[in-house]
Length: 318
Image 1 (spheres, rainbow, N blue to C red):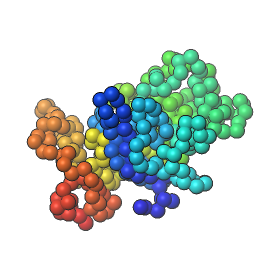
Image 2: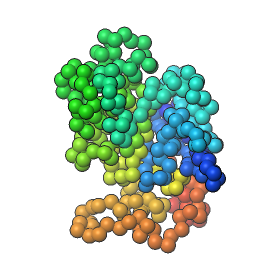
Image 3: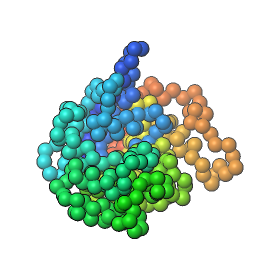
Image 4: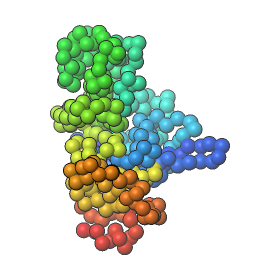
């Protein structure tokens, strides 16, 4: 295991199971990854691959009929002892301090993340009241400062307005401000640009990257878009059907993908090479390739792992 001091978070053999009348279904299966301190880890995969379920487990948000059935989620705060989040109950004060305080969340759809009946100022200040010892005047000062930091003009006036008075891109900036206002050590960004048009997407990605570098916050960036990954991440973990099938640096994985699923994801991205041509689907790229046989990650050196047959993984070993 890497030196814990180098990581803000380590997930070890995590499984999340959902129980039903038809039996138990594992949505996440033996997932392990590290989130280095001050770095951005992208978790990529199609819808239903287990990305968001893993993120919810990190925040202790798995509710019945779901449950964490195996593994550890180890949070390493800058001050204090490591905490296994899977051992904390909903009533635990420590989980309350971690969720929204030490670990922040940027949700996919800003309109559902913000309350329509409370002003932006009330929502930003509430986070501070819950996690910091501040009075109303200080909370408003910090909220105005944070809105300014995320690029919202005339923040003192905006503080009194409601979500419906903001555009989609501006609402997402507010959600980012809310996630950062308590100075968390980790931010989970769950598809934060999916609901936005391409131009606004680029602005939000640039903003996130800038703020991450300024604050030194670790980021788990969840997305299905490998094109976005190249812009913002340091490392990447590729998920398929609840498992991680490939891990490595962004440069390694995007330049030289090893797993068939990673190759299929990359092939489905529009590029200069396929202008005007029909884009391949992931299934059409995979064809008859069976990628469900080898599910265990094998380390092949240089911080890289892939779920391939041992003999095939050995050919890529360094």
